[in-house]
Every structure is written in structure tokens, then in C-alpha cells.
Picture 1 (cartoon, rainbow, N blue to C red):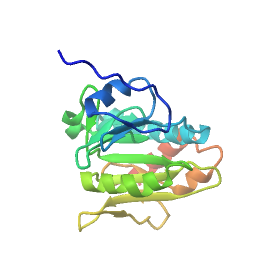
Picture 2 (spheres, one colour):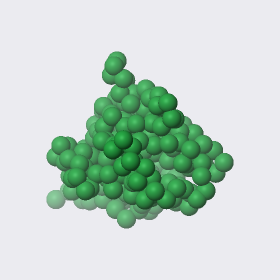
Picture 3 (cartoon, rainbow, N blue to C red):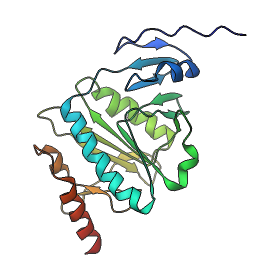
Length: 214
């Protein structure tokens, strides 16, 4: 019987050579980890602001999707495998719609997701706005939101599939709101994410319901 590889101790922020199968063993219980080009990494802990933004989006999307069984929301400890590079990414949040539940496996979700979000930190700017954007584009991801998690910063970029098939920035409506074409009734106002504290999710859901019925 082949000898099992000895996996390295985790030093966060450091890449280690490993196969996809080794990564699936190594990543267990280590928080946010990713696998790219035959190497795995465990990232450092996220900031309090990062977690607040993530929980806001998570609760908002869960409330929109679950009552109508439209899909599932996954957060930053679930691997999204993108065969186009190949890579195993852990977006801060991603959505798999009900019609694509066959992509969900026991240890990972086979890409692309239907919607993904990365919350930008000081060390992830290039990775989230360039590297992952290319990977998500190549994989066929329909929508990608990059949202600023840095204190005092307010970057907000929502990408969608355009007529040429590429992921490109979408434009807001006349009220400055950005609307999803993938998730029914889901839209965001960038001004929410400059507020401290963040808006009450229940108030946001009421606004969305009123908007849908108007």
C-alpha cells in the first residue's frame, strides 16, 4: 500500500507543494485555505470589519434564497474548485442556485458558483481584483462582487457577464443601486457599506420587499 504523504505544519501565509487530494486532508479545520497550481496556503485571520460585512451579506442572501428554496449560500470555509486553472478557492461567500446543486460534493463545490464575493483586505488587493477575477472569468462565473473590508476604504465593484461573454463591471440604476441578474430580488446600495454600524438587515429586507412590490 502506498505510504501516505506527511503534510506540513500550518504556517499561515506560506505556500506548500501538495496534490489536490493532500490539500483536502491538510485544509480540514484550518479556516480559510486555498490551493493553486499544486500548492496550498492557509490565510491569516480576518478583521472584525471583514466578519461584519460577511455576516451582513450572508444573512441577507440566506433570507432571500432559503424561503423559496432558490439555492444555498456558502461562506469562507467551503472550497470552490475551478478546473479552468486548476485551483481550489475559498471565496468569502458564494451562492449555488437550486438548479446547480449537483455541483455540491462532500468536501468541495465544483465551480463555477452562480455568484461570489471577496472582501478585500490590505494583503488581498491584487489577488481579489486581478488574479481571482481572471479565474472567475475563465471558469464561467456569472457574477462577482469585490467589496472593501479595509477601514476607511470604500471600493465596490460588481462584475456581470456582458454580451461578449466576459465579466465586466455592471452599472448602477438611477438610484445608485446595483442589481443581480442571477439572484431574484437581490440588489445592493454601496452606501450601506460605508456606514458604521452597518444597516440593520431586517430594515434592508423590508426595503427590498417594498421595492419588489412597487
